Image (cartoon, rainbow, N blue to C red; front, side):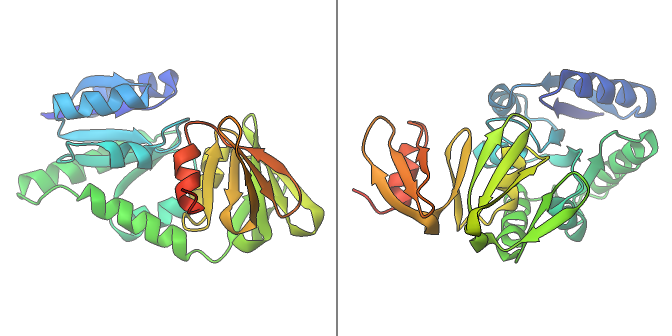
Length: 249
């Protein structure tokens, strides 16, 4: 039996997956479920599961960040996601198991069987660090960022984006030439699409293009003046990261 943990910020998604596991997968025992990523990190480090089902799109701490924060990483991983985007290509290219939501029972059984077969043959678990390296590498090499609008997808050069602002489950993207679009994705999804060497999260509601920062104003967490004159707040949580990126002592 595979000791298994399910992690998803949506409790209904956890209940649905757990029901499918109980009804279609005899070789799995769900030992814990978590909707809070911070609690999930503690749970994995303590319980040391054989298999983890992980949602990559979660607020505050997403699935990739969660993996980076783990001490215990000797488990098999099945990614669950509703977003068939750049990450899926990385998973497929590296034979990483993933399931698109809503999860199909046959695909679930197939993914679990692959994990079971790997363990039965003595093959080692996927190296989580290697998974993260592959995703970050593909992300940084991506030449254009796909912005999903209501009826089309616009491909934008990263250098043309000045900053992104969260508007609930949507994100407003501000570009050069006074252009702006409302994207039907969360700011966390946009953060994952932007090259990490060029963009950074400075606030829970803002991502900025580091090359477009013109001034740093010292007050509270701080504020950034961008190339278009916009003033963006810096949260205390991200202040040190911003100061390091700007080489401000």
